[in-house]
Image (cartoon, rainbow, N blue to C red; front, side):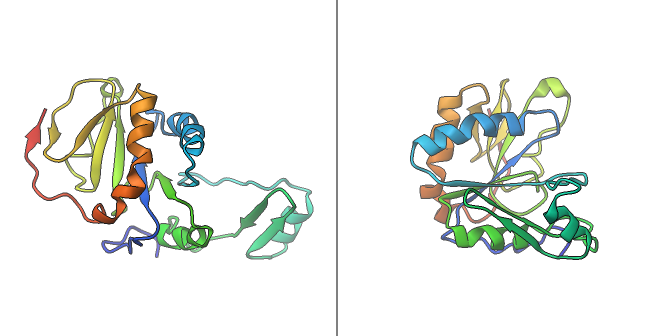
Length: 195
């Protein structure tokens, strides 16, 4: 499956929260600041990040790279400290979020943050900086639950506004997400605007 599905199976035992924003908004920078704070609260947080370009986590010349280039698929390399699973996916136009979730699920994280994959049907926290001149996604995406922004905005009914520069408030909101998860596995209804 190469593109979003309308009925992504949202497992009640695997809380998901998408972090959606236009490029340049600071998704990765924000996650980098939030992850240690969430870990300090006792949460095991997995992250699935979408890359819009080809990438390689392996180094040419290393045994794992040589074996992958020779045709190993998947190629799993492991040590006492970490493991990496690498697969070539030349037949896919896009990454399949459902398949990636299936890989993460056995690890039983308390929360999975999904950076990118903004077209997929899963609850999201939208990051928005009006100074970038990009439109809000919340008006088109009924899966957006909150918008973290650095400016006043009118938002649809039922969508929370968070201060993008308040790490404590963002940490509180995300840390509470796993408890809210069972009731958040459906899109918003109603599209009235509130400020």
